[in-house]
Image (cartoon, rainbow, N blue to C red; front, top):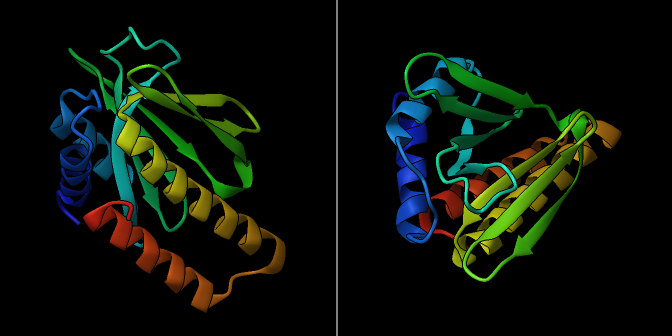
Length: 166
């Protein structure tokens, strides 16, 4: 699993060059540090965490695993930030497009996570991944785990992570 998150984020940034992100390697190391051995990384991307389009120095890496959503940032001098959003905390999410960049707003029971400075092309991909992931996890919470559905979701998100949204 070493550097798997970094590779997925780099592929995301290559597909969506307008997305603003800095110090990706350092942020990915923090995210990888907190991933459990039994978790599978399905998708990863980078964005600015915060509502302002002018705040371009708050890059966070978001990792979607088969169990949760992980948000990590390495601070400039020392320390780091780490957040985890479990599927039972999801409420909904919103996509907003501005003149240059867009935002994905993930609403949880506890807080609202605003992911800004995403390129126009990245918004459709992020929306597809988040909606598929959230709907599947909500279904699992309500009806129990269906192994066929879980495997199908893993394959879809892995495919999008490799080649982007079609």
